[in-house]
Length: 373
Image (cartoon, rainbow, N blue to C red):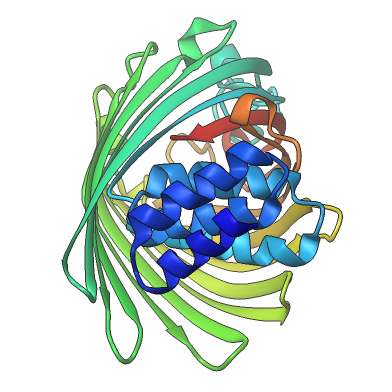
């Protein structure tokens, strides 16, 4: 107890190195001294030793039976994540899908010429996905943060024609002002595919977030990008989307959100260009048992600009899609094998199109493991 009190006294006067030494000595005498471990974790945070503090807070989050302390641990972990200058993470996932290629569920084209080719029909498969990401953060001033993000992710299937590898570079500028937080992020991404449909994307996104009270937050995002395919020139072009979302915190552990989305795709071929409109809803819940669940839904329409080719009718018509997607995911905060966080997820996507080639459904349920360092 004397060592703990000496550490608390040193911490109070700002002598963090001395406080850290005393708290470590107290824990060496009694490893179950929870107060000493909590104070050590917080003092390491105050001293700027983010990695060591993060390790302790994560352990406390898993091992401390007093759940009243857990919101505090999560708050400190959020502070660490916001201020830690460098970090990286790794992930591994199983990604089974009933329709890997988003192929049609139909065999014939209806009013179109011929039948749907085998390679354009729905094909199921189980993929193995692995990824690495890293970031570097620095603050030019108290209100500004710049983060350099990079990631690489690969997916492997039994049918190697679906294999892909993506590399992304994304710097992010964040600025907090009296009216809210602004974000600007240019990006470039390259996806390599074994079917020779390599894709290069580059563009810029922007966001704005503003509290509208103690429980409500408004979020606005917009992005514009150029898409260039290696062997699919008709799909080359630009893509723009904008989203507005209102989030409402029902309780300290429950958040609901809803919003609207607009899309504009402008491609080389007008029959592939479209305007899209959608609605979004979601509910996040941190249960007292330590389980966190997220449920989301999106529904919308895409109206294409020009008549679809190959239609054997005197009055051709453009493609029109209606879609909806339901998703659910969950994790158990107390279960972290070897420090990895497992997340189970399932989603169902239904795309209804007046062109049979694009009428499909997809069910995907997967299990991912990730760890931050």
